[in-house]
Length: 154
Image (tube, rainbow, N blue to C red):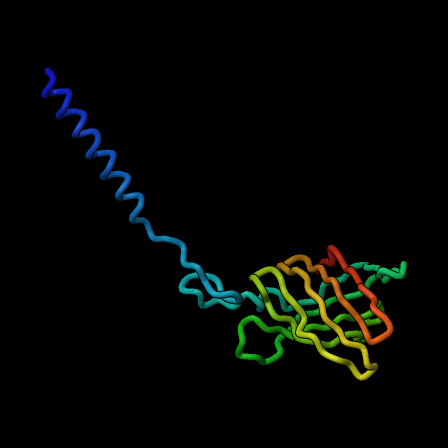
C-alpha cells in the first residue's frame, strides 16, 4: 500500500511538473525598444499619436489658456522616438515649434531649444491615442514661466 501511495504521488508530481513545463514554454512577450511595438517590434508607436489634441491650460503666473492645441506629426526622422511638436493658441497660431522624443511609449520630452525671442523652451508630457498632457518651461536669464496643459483631447 505504501508503494502504491508513493507511486501515485510520484505520478501526480510528474503530471504537475509536465503541465507546469508546458505552460512555461509558451511564447513570452517580446520587450520592444522605446518607440516600437507589436509582433516582432515592427510597428512605430509615434504614428498613433500624429494628430491634434485640444484643451485648456494655465501657467504659474495665474494666466489661463482656453482651447489651445498640441500637435504631433512626422518630422521625417529615422529615429522612431522622434516626432514634430507644435503648441498652438486658440487661433491655431504656433507658439512653440520643437521636436518631441519618446522617453517611454507614452511619455515624451521636448528637445530643448532657444527661440528667436531669446527664450529657451523645454518640457515633458504624456500622450496616447486619445489624449495628451504637457508641462512646458519658458525661460531666459530673468524670467521662468511654467505652463501646464492637462487632459487635452483628440
